Amino acid sequence: MNFVKKSVAVLLALLLVFSCGIVAFAETPQEVDYNGNPIVVVGGYGGAQLKLRENDEVIWYMNTDEILHDLLQNLIRLVPDLALMKAKHPEFLAKTLRPYLDKYLGKFKTDENGESVYDITPTLEPTAESAHAPNIENEADMDLLTHLKGIVPLEQCYFLGFDLRCHAIDNANRLKMLIDSVLEATGADKVDLMGQSYGGQVIATYLSLYPQEAGEKVENAAVFVPAMGGALLAYDVLMDRVALDERSLLEYIEFGFGWETDFHQLLNTSPEFLVDDIVKAIMPQLLEIAGTWPSLWDFIPLELFDEAITRLDPVKNAKLIADTTAYHETIMAKYHENLTRAQNAGVTITIIAGAGAKALSGSDINSDGIIPVSGATGAVAAPFGKRFNDGYVPRGTTCSDPAHHHVSPSMELDLSTAYLPENTWVCDGLYHGMEEFDEFSRALFIRQAFSAHPLKSVHEDPAFPQFHAASNASTGLIAKFDRSPEGFVSDADTALLVKNYSASKMLVLDISSNNAGIDFADVYRVLNPGETATFAVSGTLHKVSAVKTDVTVTYTLLGTSSATPTAQRRMDFTILNGPTASFDEQEPLVDVDAEYDYFSFTGPIFRFCVKKSGLSEAMNVLFKILERLQKLLTAMLIRR
Image 1 (cartoon, rainbow, N blue to C red):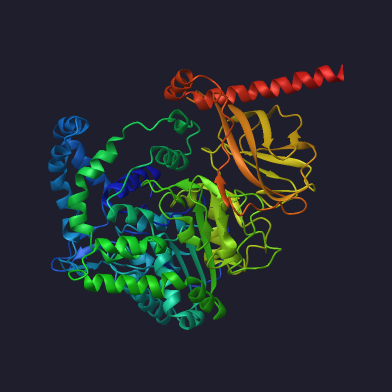
Image 2 (spheres, rainbow, N blue to C red):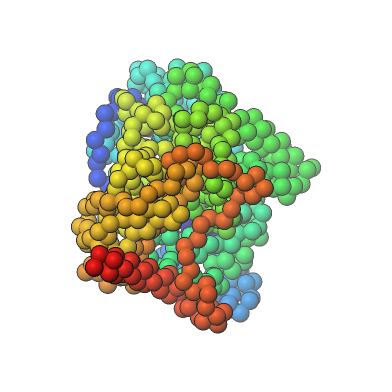
């Protein structure tokens, strides 16, 4: 799926309940020591076609081109309604959009028990012949096939057809049938499983239900940004509390397009966002159609389930309540035990999650934009905007080895409490379904999904550390110290390595570290696209461990006409360089370290004007550059 379509799909997801959920890979083929197993792929939510059984009419996968064409044809009717919408009359737009909701979603309605009102079935049966890649034409998953070409033989790929509305257990049983059919048809001993988003939830449910059988039939099971512990979007929709986070949405789009212009820097206020009004206008009809979809209730995060389930009627929705409660209690609440049993039976399980983003739908939970990082990994996570205080001691509920540094460099996530601490990787700043735009996570996923030599733990290969900062042209660069694992720093480090990920030449203007005691020499440096430069560390790193610090790189891109010619990337690091700092039990959580605000001491009117103009970040960058020049001039005077 190209990114334009994916962006449209995501925006529709926020309006129509569907997350961007089709597995995608790099356009450039990547070498892999393929193990020769048949590969069973479980796509994301909405990643399989559905049809009406009575006439075989395909009614899903949603054709975004058709929807856009349909809307544009009726734009002359929509524009007045949009104007009325801004005048606080949402009923006009709701009335206009109702036919579109009926047309594209009406046949997906379920009754009070979560059963389909219409007789709908996946176009792909759970058989090897039906699911075989060479036999699939005009499927949503055809986009996926174009990415797998050149990496593995397509004749080895099989795709699970499923009904996105059904319980995860129902679709896990379809997966079980497909695995049996593929093994029988191919004569292979084992298959590899790979899935993204909802596909990760289905695979984890299958492994939970049939751990011993999986050990006999599955070699690798790799899940990317898995919805194992639920999706915030489902909760926000079912609780009627969707409020789009504009900045996260812009950052998501920037990452997918690889835009070097940081448009989100210009968004320092929270203006009224029209899509929020549209969502509110269509929500009643949307809930009428999808409010009893079993999969949406299975998506409710465990910690929010007791609150959410009160929205259902205990009499009318008794079966739906019983089924989804059983799922949460026997599957979701017991992933550690369930997946460990599958591991012990012989399955190599890999979990790759995104983190560091506020939910696009508005919840203040650390996520990849759609999936809470706590749900994707099982780990304890600080709320979005908060972190564990310095000196935090890992809880160690699933890994108590003190030599394992399972607390994220940002000190926002404790993977010692994860479902599988030794088999979980986290990419900070990676948005949901964006693995194809980050070379690290893409390479890791491909290696773990169908390699003859997948990593058995996060400690096995320094090239794939447990914590990674996602990077592409939109993030500009990535920085790490030369001798410590990514995201950590000790006095063994002598230099900072900075790699230019943009498509333009980059002039580094300043590098600074907060609360660490170190600085960097010979900062002014031009980096060509893809080039890595070494900046010597000066000063003395504090003799302490479990203390959060950061490194901010200020730069400008040369030869571009970017709307934001100067930019910064601040990366989180944890100091591991001596005795552990004392932990304040009275204040276990603190605010995420904010960048220094050079306008904090100005008058309120001036500060308001600067922020409202959208220039505060750019002006802070300017002051950062002036600080560096002051340091240089001071050093020159001292030498004289």
